[in-house]
Image 1 (cartoon, rainbow, N blue to C red):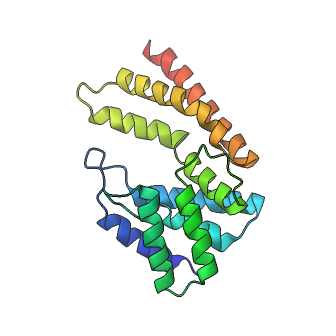
Image 2: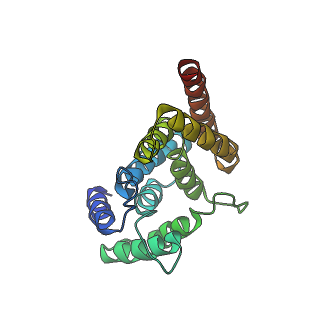
Image 3: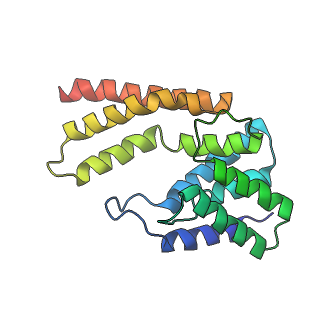
Length: 196
């Protein structure tokens, strides 16, 4: 399957969705593309149906609504779009189910490999170097911005994200998650030496 048409749809649709005006550097398209790349990497190591994984990763965050949860809005947009381009009903159902489950990172349900990979790819985009960049940029937009405020923000998010390794659904993602936590830990250690 050629994913370029789907990527263009994602780019166009996410640009039309309401993004947070508070943090203009954060956008759904960039996040989606990072999740897509991680999903492909995980699939290369773990297997699974590439079409299901890629389509679910690309469309997992496509919908926005004030009335329903984002996963439900995204699944609705994804199903409608995939149907419009002639994707088989069986594939549409699998993709829609993964998108609906994606937000429930703490679930104990028995998930398909494809669902576990997409959930892990999404989770991996929230930690590591990207988290350090995001936290520093957020701190820079706040009043009285300083390196110390950025340090404390990074440290707080490190503290709250570290236990989320339990949400990783595959050992491959768990290993990567812990590497990213170690990166942040090392960064904070060095930053402490330089700041205080």
